Image (cartoon, rainbow, N blue to C red; front, side, top):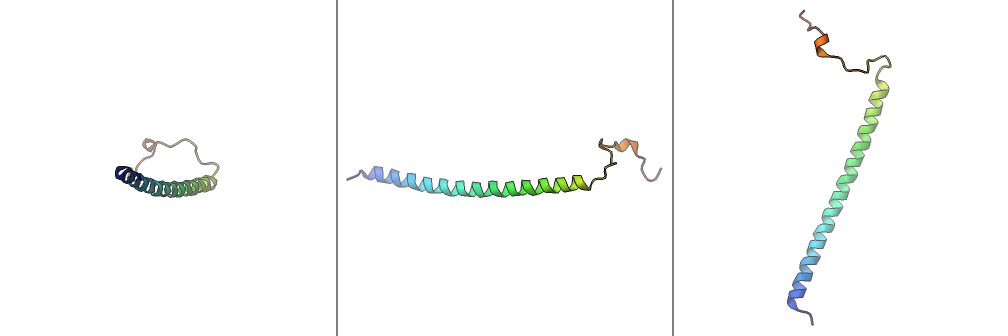
Length: 71
């Protein structure tokens, strides 16, 4: 016969393991969703790069070089 204290400890460990399993599954699903979002964003970025005209300047322009419309 097992000690009642050992049974209680075993039950608590099984509960903790169950919670850990559920958490791991939830985290796996979250990582999979994030990977899908990353893949989608990469495709969108590539599409935007393809749409950019070839003669577009590659260096960012300075706003100081442009005059406001009222000048």
